Image (cartoon, rainbow, N blue to C red):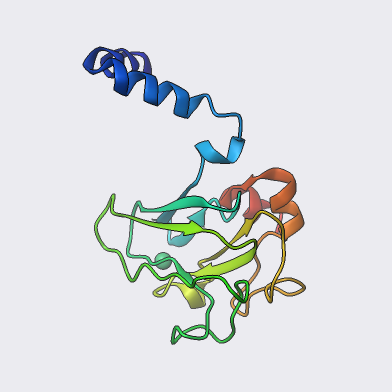
Length: 171
Ligand SMILES: [Cu+2]
């Protein structure tokens, strides 16, 4: 299956093929996995991974896989956020509620620090997650979000990616 797709890509355009290959060959491990799935499954709604590290300037894609979800920063400018939990000078982000399967919201993280975010419909059901950009820092450090737990920034820095199931098993 994968092999067939690969051959087709190369065959369709030599330039496209080489672009794909160089993209895959990047040494930075975070560059190949800057994707967060937004999922409702078995009566649970969650972001997966729940903890993710990116380098400054990295773009994360939030992909609507099942259910209705948003990716919304804990920032006081958004009605549901009790407190701001992203770095002071960082640009807040809010996808709004996405209902179409496969729809994607992208945000580029330029400011270093710790970003906690939530899903508007499932905030009180603990659909929350954390992103560390470059290094931990900002108002999210030293406490957990008001709605529940996310991986610590140190865990995220150490592992790069922390899957939802892995986190749930240990918490
Ligand atoms: Cu949700």
